[in-house]
Length: 427
Length: 78
Image (cartoon, rainbow over all chains, first blue to last red; front, side, top):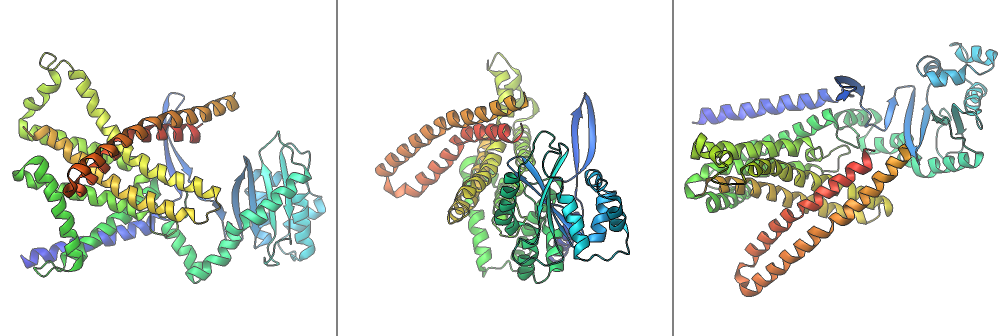
């Protein structure tokens, strides 16, 4: 018996190692698979994931993308002017059009890799890029440099509004956008992140490693969802390993808590299904613990952690599985024909067709309750907190929507799963 | 035309959430009133009654959540 327990622990450890490796590897993906129907045909597309605010970050320059009142603004922070010029001329079609309007002599001087990038050449580039101010229908740029407190002399800022053919910005708009960027956006943008985050993480490289592990996203796309589910699974397995090690008659604190949870659900199962059907308890406890841990993972203050139940797929999948278990249990207890004659006999119960529809509505109601509570809570937190500038209110809201609603919804999901089985089985 | 669709979607989101919030509020208040009555009759079962009340209120909330999902769909996908 001891050998079997030892083998089980190694299996769990191998699972944890594989999942941690997968979480690290998945951080390299930044493309999403888009499946849809376009002009009548099924279409698969590999699009770059657009959930990241820093949509271009290299060693030489960084680009932040913001949206201010439906104006898309790109904020560049340049470290290496030569590489930035190459990027302008080669990779960015709109910017290369801007670049080609420069004076040819200046163009040659800017493209020449041996030219020394002193202040005057940098000024030429920045001013030239910022010069297309009013009246150009294709692109409009405005800029500022050396107005920001505390930035180094090697960087310059430059913002542009692209692809807006009908809108002309006046200098008043420009100064307003500049002020918004200095006061509201720069504190949260790459420059401040570069200054503040290394203090927390220890160095910029450590921040990059942590960012590649956890991600900094504002929504939950496919790969980030898989990563969060793997993290939930890792927590689950760690819980099992640390408690299974010392299963003895002198219980430790963790074992006491788990036994309390198990006994509570044991009582529920024996109340609903009868005393001889206690084999359902592990299934019920697993559902409750999985949903509970998924909801609590969103409370951990690591940037990029989100609850897996925020995506519609996780609650929907769980709902489908729960209803399928209900049907299979009913078939096992009552027999195949005994279960289905309730739905196919229009004489014995005249509402047979409506019962078939109500099975689907059970799936939708049990899933959307969980999904709507969690996602709606998160959106309400963001919207209300942005109205009060993130002072004092987010703490209370997060306490209520995160811990209370998360626990209650996990409990309700579990009780409903139990009740549906009880309705089918109990005679 | 695009602006009209967007304006109509936002208006619809407001109406959906506004009317959809009537039902759950009414129903959950009713359940809480009955729970208070039950506790007044049998104070030794207070914790069981409170737990049942919370579960009943969470189930009754679900129609309000449906209208919230529709409102979010309207706001963020048009």
